[in-house]
Length: 186
Image (cartoon, rainbow, N blue to C red; front, side, top):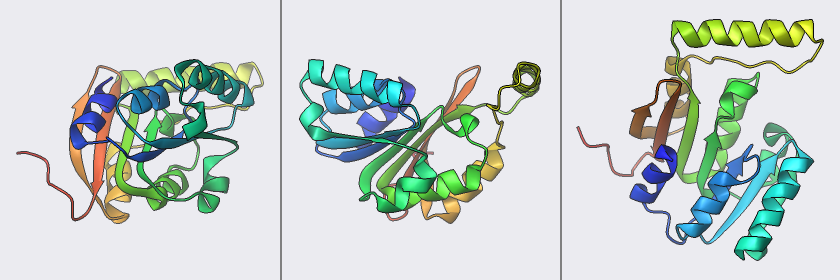
């Protein structure tokens, strides 16, 4: 909700977007309801894409959506840039943070929105426990706690500055704007 509020505050009326790892489509449906003109949803899960597409049909905006199954890093260069790129709880599921942020920033014409785990001891312990359980179950999926400073430096290096930062007990919400856009209020 905080990411969506920040995006609405930055102005998304008529904007195009790419929702990276958008799952069942919560972000994309909210962006469309807030006035975005069209969007692309990229996810590695065909089941999530099918659910998002079904909901888009029910909400009447499926004709303005494109759905693409795959690893965003692998397919990003083939996508047209969009005004807005969102990664809501995606960084923690991807092993190569620099590649994911570079690919995302390269497609973001104006705004880049991120929601990722806060970097504190309880979160580090939780991630270690989750990954240990995954190893015991012989499942290849892991979660990753990428450092906040490294994420911020990577995004700044791609020509963005932070417009909004908010925290919840578990998550941090960052909205970046392409350099040349307005600065955050002090």
